[in-house]
Image (cartoon, rainbow, N blue to C red; front, side, top):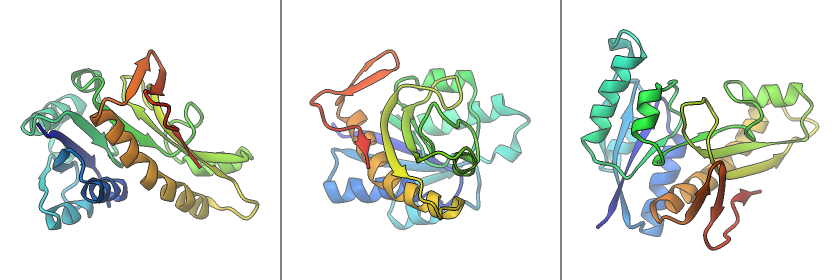
Length: 209
């Protein structure tokens, strides 16, 4: 039986688009069942609709606080009975109840080499700290923000003339390669998770450069 994926976005959803395109190209044994946004004006919704993917909006502005929003979001997600829930530029901090409900099947991508630079403005912070390397991390989501078992990491050098935009663009190009691969690994049970340590069962590289 084909597995199902629900993707959450807040904006243009470039990583969502990369996952959808990869699933189509590689003929995944899985269905992108829905794309859900917390913003009705999210550009990524139009792409999903053009691809024939069901979409839904749970507008966070309609709720008084995180708990009722997360409860409504869970209801919308669970209507599709997903095996994996993918955060692709979903700009909301999720409650403990939400992350516990999807434990082991909720995955996020963060634009830094975690555990360095959790939170926002990661590329600018890396530049300000004089980092020689930057990148992105795919990880399982836990109750702790930007802290969970690392499934894959992408690595790029920081160049002398980099600014935030140039560095971000190079990292994003690798994100579009790495995130679909990591999602497929989850769907196919290719990852062995031991606490915070995750290894690919057949030794496929979890580092993208």
